[in-house]
Image (cartoon, rainbow, N blue to C red; front, top):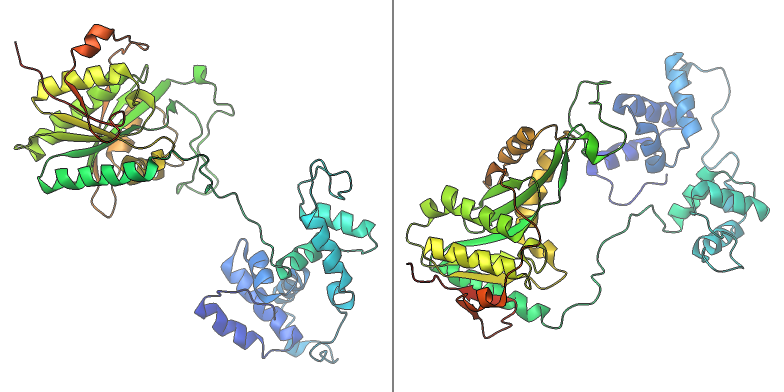
Length: 408
């Protein structure tokens, strides 16, 4: 019996029982479990038990016709190990040929047997057959599993070139967050979520629907057939696990980003932090809140003047946006909440974002921002010199504070 590693205890128990049955009884036993589990069970049980799909299907047919092994025609049950041997057992060279084919380079090597193929089991079976072994794709799949191969997707682990100050910046940012939280001053993580098409468009994922009645959407995602684009900008309170998502319509600009932070302060921040003496913003190094964007700093200065609080900004190093807490504590759950639901209108977008919660207690307020923000705003040199911008001693281009200017 060819069981797979890490089999749950409940399955190990009935697999032990299966080993005590003869060939016919085992066939019917596995067939009954396949019928009980439903769709996909035949393939799963075939992999788990080592029994072929035709054998399981034969057992299902016997159950349907009420032909139980105990009442079968007189005849003998084969002894253990009887019957035709598998090809890989009678000729061990088959696995060696298959291993060479799998490992061969497929692009640019003129000696490769699998030039420009995707190495599917059916393609491999054809190539192995050309070498004199008449095998099916099922046999190839079984041999690959025995050789230690499995179907695997790509894993995003290679980050490319890393900035030399990356580690030090993370430590500095973490120290700033701890310092602000210790004094009960607000710390927010900000970013723009992926732009979403609003209309009868596909939204990946699945949700529970009446069987056979999926929601119909357009075949092609042409923006002109929809309502428009939604630009969700999230401001996530790190200490209180709550957020405001401001959904813009026309453009993602620095003015829109800072307005989203101001709306967080108006809706949640000023109530939660009535004694706040300063504000810390953790942001990515690019986009509408980029380190080199003059408009971002100019609008932050206006925010500091309006709140009467120093606004400190610490940027994540380039290429590390996935470490931004707003990504995996807010945006990830928004995507999970609305998966499989077409975003038919801006009202639907607001309601779905506002309905997002987690077991940790996340609460989200969402609102629509219909202001027309002009892209490409230019900030002159004299305007930049008028800012009360204090770069920090450590990496002043990534860490800086904007002090409020005197009123009047």
